[in-house]
Image (cartoon, rainbow, N blue to C red; front, side, top):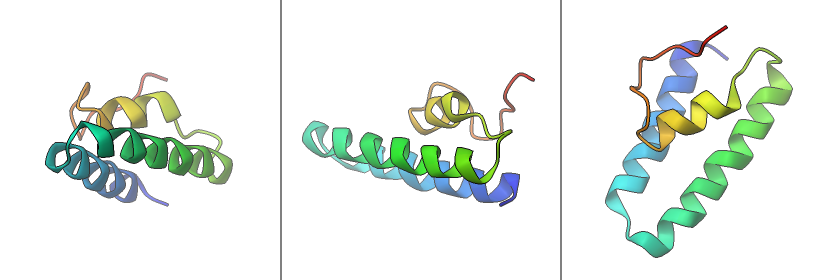
Length: 67
């Protein structure tokens, strides 16, 4: 997958979080976490913590993880 694919997924999860009430948000975050595990298995350089921070809105969508 490309960086643009990761941004697309993070954008979708972030949009879902923004549109749903608190009860649905935990399920969305669980799904984002499970997807991040699979992405890390596919790409050892994938940074799960950074991806989840982007999903939660803690970091900008186009930010890059520290190397």
